[in-house]
Length: 341
Image 1 (cartoon, rainbow, N blue to C red):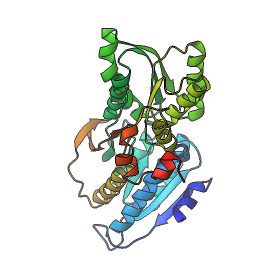
Image 2 (cartoon, helix red, strand yellow):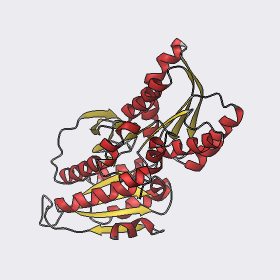
Image 3 (cartoon, helix red, strand yellow):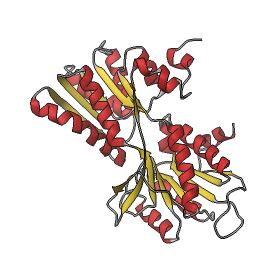
Image 4 (spheres, one colour):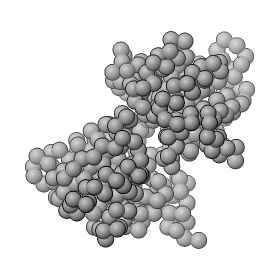
């Protein structure tokens, strides 16, 4: 498939998805959307899905899309965006690798009169045009409340996501909103709280391993995503503690869904990417047409104005919910989740 070819190029990857239905407000040319992501983002299973759905929706709306994936980390994303600015784009969509590092080039984009939509991760310190994502505070609340329902007392390990991603802090706020009152009551104890440099399975293995080497007296693990949860499950399996220690994560990655139905992970927060990516494509076209709809709410990103925030709802998925959510939506097949022929 042509989309897959985009994701495997090592150097700067550019993909133009043409159409000719939606016209720019001032001429007969189709709207052109620039979409920027850093390749480190694609270490997470879900992102290939997002891009494919976004591109397909944009094509259905008649817009052109130039998708650019930088060859490395957040610093590489800056020249990538500069490249897109030279491609006569009408709107820029960004999955930022770093919450603050892109503020300079994003301000340059806005100064040119090009709207900027932050996709799933906010861009800080600059007045972007809009932000579309799931309610990350609610994700954190779902993680913590799911654990509390199963482990009302005991020692908790919290493993947060990348310190460079503002979503990590929002999820963390939601987790603490549920857990902190119980800590004050003495019902639970936070044995340790870990912050990762990146959303990294290998880093999570190391850091969680250090904790378990010091003590195995833990009853619950709140992992900021399923990649981190998978690291925790692997380490618990090695210690014959999987299923005894309750683990939660987010993203409904296939391995975690398999672990849930097998009793090794308690739950995952499923985020219907179809809704998010399709909505983002529609918003990008609306921004280019200077016809942006009313947001669900506004957020503060440490800039000079409140940012329009378009919010999608996350869904908790336990073993008994798997068929009616993840599988029913076609996110994963039943055969893959249950490992059946």
